[in-house]
Image 1 (cartoon, rainbow, N blue to C red):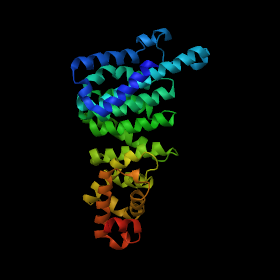
Image 2: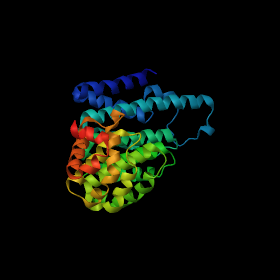
Image 3: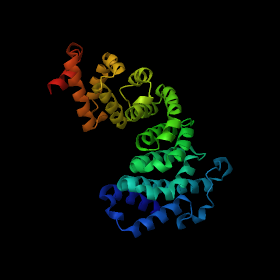
Image 4: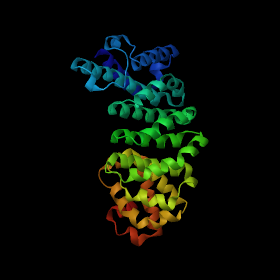
Length: 316
């Protein structure tokens, strides 16, 4: 329990203080060794728990071992929280740390336990986000595991996988590897946009937004945009609104014909996202959406006037 608390406190402190806590290289070296030992079940607090085996079935274990395994995962889970915090505070330089732990995280992403897979894939997404372009050398190995997890039986794993894939496409500079996987990703997004699970659908929409924003020429907008608009507004993962609306606003600014033709369907969606709950949009995205409403009012005032919420934005 002491180790899990230390991990939790360290993860929280890193988020608050930034990289100053690990500015001394020796501190980061020491931390990396500790985290790696925890992920590999070689830390002192784990030595009485037996060798690591992420493929064992709970049916094969007695209750005492299961309880021990649950504690063991808690230790690993909080160590992964530290990794996520490090990715946030170190940014692109986190790639040097990631190469020490990537195999361990990928192992958990292939676990027989859905909660381990979901957590690990979520951690991969945050690592990709933190590394930005420095994720490039890992593009192939990440695509391999994430494409596999895109078909996972667990909804949480699938949601995290599609979120991570969108971030990988947006951040990696390995255009060859992205090109190899692009059409396959796009084909897999169509059924995900039709899923009942709201978070999966929202993450799929966010992924579509990132794909269009970064590789518009590779996306058949005439087919993809109507499918994207049909799942809006997002219902659960409001963070994805940033990538969705950045994409749509830019298409409007370019006068893209498909998005212009979808305006009658988009106007009521705009009214909903500008309404409650307020946390649907961060401040930057809200400003983009308001400017879009004003732009559309300038072009099609009679249509926009049908929506009081939009007129409030125009006159605000």
